[in-house]
Length: 303
Image 1 (tube, rainbow, N blue to C red):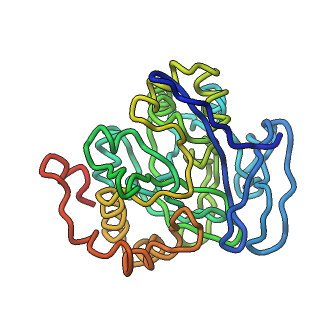
Image 2: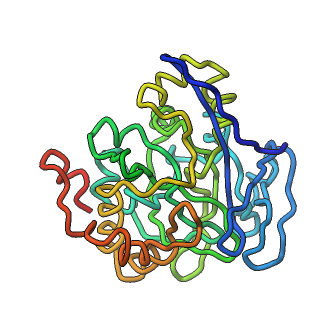
Image 3: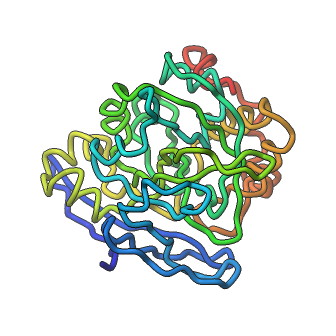
């Protein structure tokens, strides 16, 4: 299956889809994710374009230490294959969920919040988020409207957080994050030991798949989720981070520890896949860290 960009014209009402990405030596890489029954080959070249290897559904019962390829999760029943015996599932945080306060605001009953490492992925500010428009912190006039996702990139490594939520929270989680590709990944401790179970990761999707799969080809559904905010393309490489959100993520990483802070600055990129957040904050984005969020969002976006 080849992922392609798709634009649908948006009349006064609904519509429009788009494209995926991944890695190379700091160049965009377009990925193809097959069904759960078809394993992919992985390139052995450091940071060269390569499809991400996807395990077959039968490998879910194998030890994560020996089966580390990401698995795509397409529905609630597939999420349940990585639930623990006592009814909990790991969630992997890489942006706002680096903050335990943010994580608890979304998942009040979470347990076992901890810092971990995730190999083979990088962060990219490259998709539109309706919540920024709802909260009045998007700046479309300067294109400072982007949220954060992750995408496969061989040779990269991220400091993330991992925590557990109850199985009963899975449907709400899926509904809340419809624009993402859900992957079951194997994080590891900072000492390099693989987790005993897989964690759910919200990764880059494509507009074409979002419209076809999540919206079931319905322009009305697309309009309700994105079109009413004048978003006709979700996944874009020509937008900049939402200022308030970027500041929040940087502070959240800094509050974890120095390793997480420096990892966020050096392994998070603009949509060009070349400019790191450290470079951005020192140039075009200078001043962002000194800006306070709106009063009503100071706690939510306070790091």
